[in-house]
Length: 321
Image 1 (tube, rainbow, N blue to C red):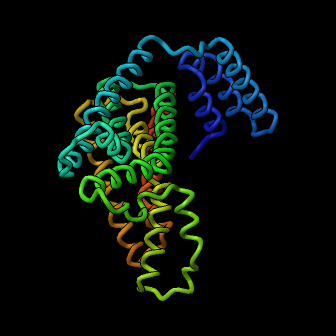
Image 2 (cartoon, rainbow, N blue to C red; image 1 turned 30 degrees about the vertical axis):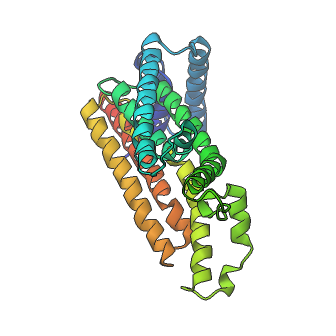
Image 3 (cartoon, helix red, strand yellow; image 1 turned 135 degrees about the horizontal axis):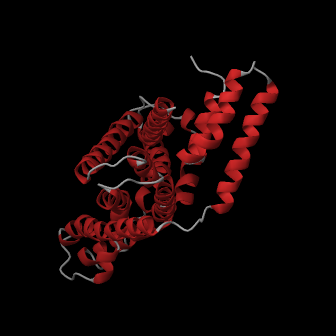
């Protein structure tokens, strides 16, 4: 059973350090609990918490400590190294298997954008595992890494929406010229349409007027699924990173544990994406659900991990109180 002022104390524990809570907040809450319940008592405690929080905010330097800056730089550097290695591992095999007798740098670069769609979230997750592993991470570092994941997601949106379709078309045109120099290249397929072009393509025919399971219905359904999947994959970085950060905030996890979490998160996301897409293609799920289900599940996992961490911190604070 909660006593009067327990929620206010939990808020103060989140905002203030342990010494301030012990010397300022606890006496005010003790007076509140000894007196009969009244609005004036709650207002007095809220006023104390607000004053202390304002003083802490004015005295707190927004410049991260040196150790947090070091962890962030190491995480970023290792993530960039993993990005280079993973992108090469994903882009080079199709390049050498293309059968082009005249390998060119341009042809190799056209395979990089589609590789980045997978390598960016994986590289950032591995960078966090290697950079934060074995160290206690603060909320400020958590926020900085979450903002970095958000920036990567914005970059992935631009990549999947416009850069990758143009690169796919350039690769196909170059390969067609190498095989059959004379005739022009065939028309673009769905993977070579930008996000706006794909959206216009799926709004032209009415899906309800088509026979379910027919060729036109399957084609339109596939395009609709591809459109929503591009949006979903754009948020894959932040969807994969946020649960990992929630797993590490205020906890010291080893690199091995974080590495296992990275592998489980990555395999779980793409496995669920594969089966949800297949269900959407077969008409068993709406295309929006089939494309967004893995992303929503990861955000729910992150919320659950954050709630568990908050509850654990609150229980420890109540135990010491």
